[in-house]
View 1 (tube, one colour):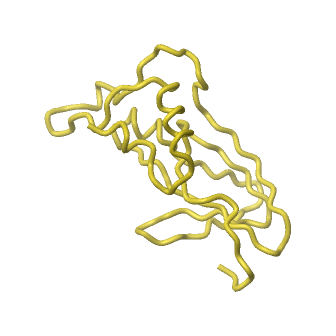
View 2 (cartoon, rainbow, N blue to C red; view 1 turned 60 degrees about the vertical axis):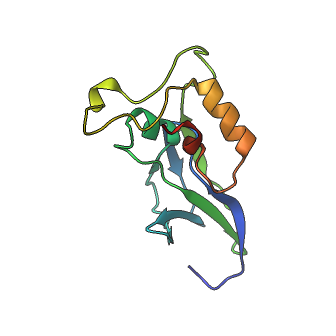
Length: 140
């Protein structure tokens, strides 16, 4: 990371979807938390960054892990990125999402209770971007 003055652009969080696909500009600023250290994700022209979201972690029973990340702002200039969030939105309202049954076994019991997207999103919004995972609320 450069020695330029750095401000937080978006605080530490994990995405509240299944997958996020991100096209970064040349400025950068995206960091991921890996082994308790913040690692820069340098922009590569034309490359897409794919983040696993909380909902994919939930249905895969942690076979795929949601990535905690943040965005740093700096004095280089404005950062412009395009993100596409893959989720169900708020519909269907009554459908329950939980660990996929075929991934479960005696050795790999469910780690999360079933929930609706509406309930998950309500909890995610209520808790805010406080640096903690929204999934802990749904752990068994």
